[in-house]
Length: 290
Figure 1: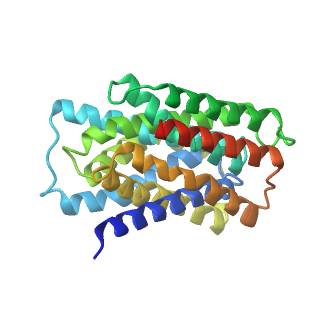
Figure 2: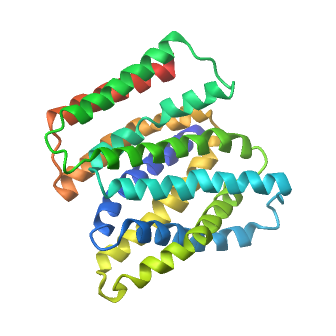
């Protein structure tokens, strides 16, 4: 079996799951509030991955005091804050805008790696970052439908991307000590517990008995595929590839997600979105190769 081919095939599958997350999120947000959806998604994901961890716990290394703190921080940044800001942002912006801003991920990973002294900033990298930011400006300044994609929604999506970049840089170090099952179990279970009071409060304000099967299936999809399975693939890939190379596959996510948004949700891709997207991805590519 060609192990590199299997690894890259898994990464493409991961990107497809994450791309479908935008669509499922939009469908679920028709009937759930953003805070309730975030709490349900993280809570369900924790319940889904916990049995996997319990089956493998005998072979899993035990975390020390400092190791536990690191895992909890990973859960805070990579799961709780990342997915909370993602869902709140998605409720206020379009699939295309969300996917393109999330596409800044490799640039943010590079920037944080430079701050930590893991990589060196060069003129080419800095130029690429500047070009990507110009692309965001084009995306926002010339979008003919600002009500569909608000500044606040895009800002929340950017925060989601930033926290996931933190998760990537810090998580790369954790993979040398703990398996992806351990990291993700701690992240989702701790995140679910942290959001439980908000989830219960929001659930009490909703008529859950009248929520459609499609909305519930969307929540289950978000909890299982992009949350548990995709994160497990992501951490497995981080253990075998450089963080910047893994994050580079996010180039595919705006393409997949935007196409799904057009086909399933009927969203329109105007010239500003396409132009801004090309500028963003060009800048990210230049920064990463700089």
